[in-house]
Amino acid sequence: MILNYIKIAWKVLLRHPFYTFITLFGISLTLTVLMVLTSFLDHLFGTHYPEGKRDRSLYITRMMQQDTSQNGRNMGPVSYKFLKEYAKTLKTPERVGISTMFGFANTYINGKRIKLNTKYTDADFWYVTDFQFLEGKPFNDQNIANGEQVVVITDDLRKQYFEDTDESVIGKSIDIENINYRIIGVIKGSPATRPYTYGDVYFPYTAPKSNYQGAGLRGGYMAIVLAKDKTDIPAIQEEFNSAVSRIPLPGTENGFKFHIVKVEANQYLDDFISTFFQDADSRKAIFYTIIGLIMLMVMGLPAINLVNVNVSRILERASEIGVRKSFGAPSRALLWQFIIENIFITFIGGLLALLLSFLIIQLINTSGWIAYADLTINFNVFAVSMGVCLVFGLLSGVLPAMRMSKMKIIDALKA
Image 1 (cartoon, rainbow, N blue to C red):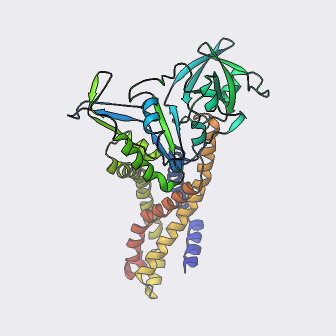
Image 2: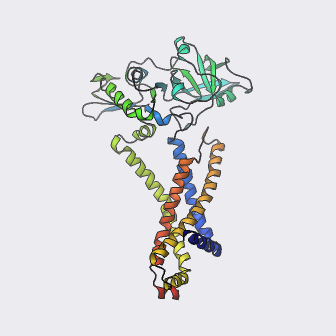
Image 3: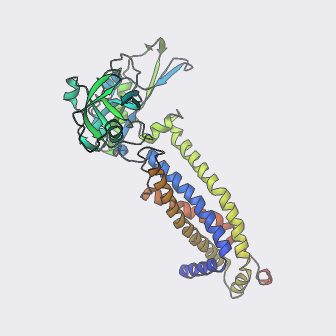
């Protein structure tokens, strides 16, 4: 029966090219926007290079200090000292990598200034991430203990700084802020949309201007805590919360006296949402509600327009409805026929949208708008998109189908 409905839908599409064009244009345009949006959200929050272990990683990125009235507060990244004492000492994780949040520097070549995004890291940073080394290797604990002036640079910086990119640059020097560093490794860079790993040049945390020796709780550092298994994440969070509870209070930092300290080890999405919402219980609910409302608005207007188009299209088939009803076809059968037809048409629009989305994503990836952009249509994006197709088909097809299925036989035959 479903196959017959699909055959009828195909014949209707061929019979009314104008309605077919309007319907498929509206469906494909709407779903293209949603697919590209879904791909971008996956790009931001999914597990991708160089954070391929994000599904079993926790992020410690900020601390909030409050006074007893909770009216005064300080918030920002934590210090290296805090992470060394309260994160590095955790027993449950597999490894804890530390790096700075953001930093900037300049280098010059042939009188041309190159602006650099910098990161200072420990050796474990290279373990908790999945950077691809095109040349050389990362610095290790021995390099750091020896105080060696070494750096890891990206392939893009290698291309800008050295004219002959075919020749190995390992062991060569690069002058950054009037200090010569020996290049120990070259990596494939990461997108700027992954701020906890993004950089142009990576220094050992003991290098000049890292400010790792600060004595307070606050500073410019963050940590990626890597669990041995995803199931260990709750245990790591509990252990970290227990360690934080032992911070001596009250305390004073930069003239501010605080009695409450709040710092969490969160998974990436929770950490991102906590930037905007402090209430842990409502974070995800609010975030998903906002995303859902945006998608509903994107889908709503085209769906309303397609309802009108579908009503007009189905009205032309009133005589068909009347004949089928006169031969005993129940309203439920007619209802399902029109719904299945509309879903079939929607999926055709979805396939067109998939092709168009692929072209747009390739354009974004190759345009240079986002350096090292790697937007994809993977299984998650495809599954969400097909789900959206189903919802869109129902939204734009149910109302016309209900209206037509309830039409009286005499009215249908007169139409």
